[in-house]
Length: 312
Ligand code: HSE
Image (cartoon, rainbow, N blue to C red; front, side, top):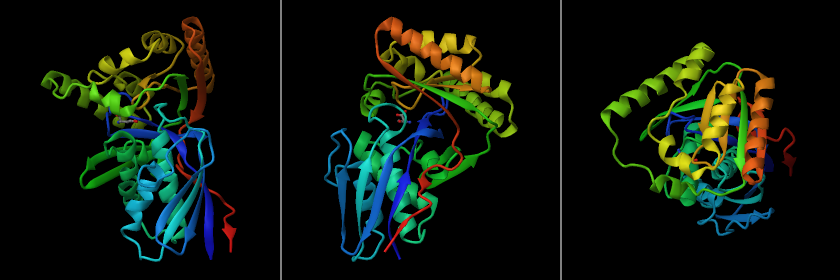
């Protein structure tokens, strides 16, 4: 019987400009690497094999908390060990904590013969997100686990819809500063105007319709956020210039990835995505801030499970 498996949970983009806490999509890269092992005793052991100095105590660790939530629904003689090698930097805005939580539960579920549904896995992984940011948001977890573009219609009960999308190229520009999701949530307005809400839900509906119809022009004009971006973008040096110049270079649109500081831009053509990456590099070179850029397509699969599990 299989007792260990390697999984590769990918980075994700949450919010997708107008869909705060409800929309997200998975990237092909970067990905973390996690080895998940099934053990015949209750408990979770975390071994961090990278330099991010994440806590090894399972209840304080994102992957550990997700697995502890899963263990509550499993027999007493089952436990897990996880060896985690992260490439997705914590505090980047491209779903680092979601990758850890998703990889852990997808790997564990695979070893258990896939006894849990994807919705169950998101539910367990939300305990991991709670450890990371104090909030059980699922907009990075859903695309990481389901793959592609996802909509969370409801958090309670969880109702997750995987959306069709036309071919899209994504450019991520990640200035090397850290923004904690908890801080980026703290600064948001707790109440909004009805007039702003009307604009926002028009754009969310427009974006979903544009993705489902493969209508690039509709996608482009729906990538507008009147609620969150005006508040959070002040935390990201160069944001306005990168957004303006990326659109001038032909990007359909984009904005803050999750809670930032990474930004994402959607493009119809691969060449445009490359030009957008150059825009980001130029702006941050001018500011004197190191940055990383990634180009990726939307990843329809989510967490990749190694094709060659170790047998015992
Ligand atoms: N929807 C969450 C937020 C995503 O924007 O706070 C965090 O990655």
